[in-house]
Length: 332
Image (tube, rainbow, N blue to C red):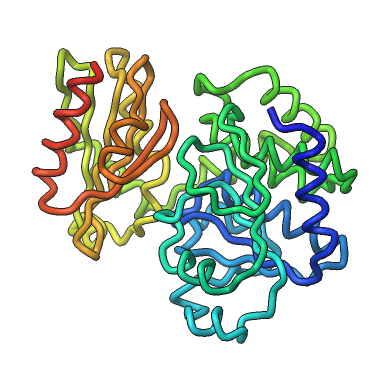
């Protein structure tokens, strides 16, 4: 558990900074977006010049968390804009929901060159120790819980907008409180956020009942690839590039698709393989048993948690599936 000394170091960095850049991992999820939105609100209320920067497109169902469109590195802002100060001159970088260079793509190069203090807030086991100050707690169900604790320590106001953002962070990383990482701390925190204005019904609708026809069509294509292995304990699904072209869906639309096969009572481990335009295969892994999928991800250069992890593989889709299948077999 983090202690007051940890939070004091973080507050000290923030207090002496006038201009703050906030970033998170590629393929931002609800925890990443919620934490970024909450901290952006807090820093602005403190009178700090604050800019958020995404490293890849944000799923459209998280855009309501932000007042303005968040620029994307490589699309709205070039690496040169960042390194040469045209995007802004910062005296602190805050990274949320990751502590891994591999999840920061080009932004990692900026970190190496900018010589700025870095504050990391994260709950993953995988760590490259990127921060000068780190609020890292692998036992936390979501980074949103750590950010909420920072708000409480610093006595920053939890407005309705902040409460909604942190509720989304925690609820999405616990599968809307279905995953095994849901504990009493999670529920107590969410109760406090509800008291501050977060409406679970409205937020659930915004997140899970707003599929576009294209996204729904993509999910149907994926479900048609479902295969069960090892006495139906391991489920695989995949999405090819042509599926995105045929349905008109975006790569961001795949978020949470991997969980669909866990409706099957025998499935203990699942993998979703997605072809990317750069030729790599993105593999998402989930476990609902003692199998530690983070060990599988780490073997292939990825990371994550025991129950949820991911990595990228090179080569043909079929080869990637065979490699992962062999590792899952060892775990099961």
